[in-house]
Length: 443
Image 1 (cartoon, one colour):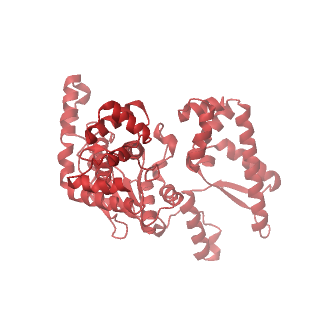
Image 2 (image 1 turned 120 degrees about the vertical axis):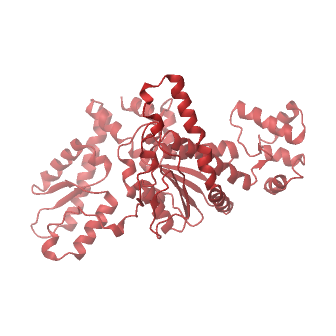
C-alpha cells in the first residue's frame, strides 16, 4: 500500500524509478512524503506502521539524551515539538509524549508557536535579555521584527485581489461571450509588460553575466508562481543544453507542491531562507522571487538570505503599490500592473500568463546573450527524443545546406551535437549574432 501511494504521488512508473528520484531529491522533497507514511500506517500498512514506531523511538531516545545533558534541579523538562511533520501529526506527538513521560513523568511536550527557525532564535533572545523573574513566563509567542525579512507594505490592495468590473456577471455569460471576455483581458497583458522593458533588459544582461561567470539563476515562488518558475527552469536543459543546476526552480512545499496544494507552505519565510542556504547561494548567483502580490513570506525569506550572501536579487510581481525598505529592496523589481483577474484573486490567469511571458523572454534572451542561438535557431538543444532529433537535423540543414540524410549522419557521428556539426562546416559567420555564437562554438 505504501509503495503504491508513493509511486502514484511522485508520478513514477515502477519501484526502480524511486531509486533515481531519491538520488536527486532534496531533503524537503523526501520530507513531503511523510503524510503518505502516516496515512498508510493509519490504514493498516505494516511497513508504514513500523517506520512510524521506529521514528517515535528515535525521537524519544534523542530527546531524552538531550534532556539528561541540559536538566538542572527538579524543574520539569520542557520539550518543544517543531517542524511540519510533527505539528501536522497529532497522533505521532501523542505517542512521543507517552514515550518521553514513561521516563520523565513530569515532562511538558508542547508545539512551537512560530516557524521553527525564527521561533527558536526569538526564544533564545528572550531568555538571554529578559529579567530572570520573567523568563519562566516567556512562551516565545512574539516575533522580533529584526529577525525576519521585511515583507513590503502595500499602499493599496494588490490589483490581482480587486474585483474586475468587466466580469462581475461572469456566471451569467454565455460560453462564447465568456471566452471573448477572457481573450480581451489577456490581450492587454503585453502592453502592461512593455513599460518594464528597460528593467527586464537590465535583468537579462545581469543574468547573462552571472551565468557566464559560472553563476546560476534561481526562481523562487509558491503556488502558480513557483510552478511557472520550475517549468521555465526545466525547459532550459533540453532547449539550450544547460546543466540542470544552471537554472533552477525553488518551490514552496517542495516537489509535491507541483501537483498538490501544500497548506501554508508559502507563509514560512524561514523555509525560503533554508532553501537558499541548502543551495549554497553566493555572489555569482541571481535569485528571482516570483509573487503575484509581491508579499509572499517564503519568497522574501529567500530574497533576504540571498542578498545577505551577496547574490543579485530580483522580484517579479503584479502589485505596483509596494513600499520597500531600502535595505531589503531587490536589485531588480518588475512590478507589473495587469489589473484585476476575470475570476477575482485567481492569479493563475492574467498574472500567471504575464509571468510565463516574462520568464520566456528572460531565459530566451539570456541564452541569446550567451551565444546559444544563431539567427533564431537553437544550436545547443539536447536532442533527447525523435522530435528533437528531427529538429536538430533541420537546424543543421538550415546552417550548412546539408540534405536531411547527410545532416542526420553528421549529427550521429557528432553525438547529436548541433554546434559541433555547425562548427565543422564553418556555418557561422556574417552577423553580430553569428560572430558572438562563433566564439561559443569554438569553445
